[in-house]
Image (cartoon, rainbow, N blue to C red; front, top):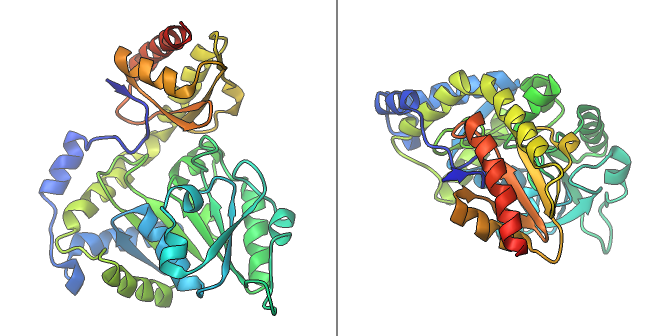
Length: 343
């Protein structure tokens, strides 16, 4: 099966498995795991932040950032289709008592579009306390948030006493595609979430980065929310291996995504724009009356796993477990799946 559902489906490489098996470990809840400490120190330095906290998932990292920078009843500004809004099962409301409001279109927004939604303390409106930028933007097909816009948004927020958070689950991809170092992409933001289990291929784990006092508070909340782990160095070793060995090959995934789009351009029943592919994701619009679900089911019977990402749209994600030869085969099989679905 050629699995294009997500870059989260990767399995640890033999080298990563060895690193995890041989990891030096301790009790991280007691602050004794040397591999976790090393990961937290390295990723904090890489992003130019005071401190980092290793957590099980990107959702926890994002939610810790919200909880540490808002109060119940506040409002958080996000982009259209943000992971915080669509993929975290209402955690912002359930855990922090905040509501989300959408700025811009297609996942991206400008300073002006953000400011249109800013609310100050008043008799009736919620208080805007946080703005979140997602880079790259998942549901928008791996789009890179323009660095100039992100910087302007964070600066405008800070000038108004509003905190800023970068959901950088795939910031590694954004850095490779834009040529801007991850530390520079993170610099304008108060807090940053990064993920090790997507493009870097680790089996689990994310990190929250930010000022040391905030990260210390997040560590306490991680415990309250059940996210503390004991000999977590086994997982941290996978993340460290990904940082060292997989981060600099992401351009291969990007090229595979562009190749897939080129091969599918012009297929009857599909609309694909190769020029829109910025990183490792390809959006395939299925033309009616055939549905994305129909094509996805047909593709699976032929040996390609791909899921709808919205009405009439499939999303293909390339990753280190998919070779160029498999991309070429996947394109042929997807074209056949569209024909089968169309009858």
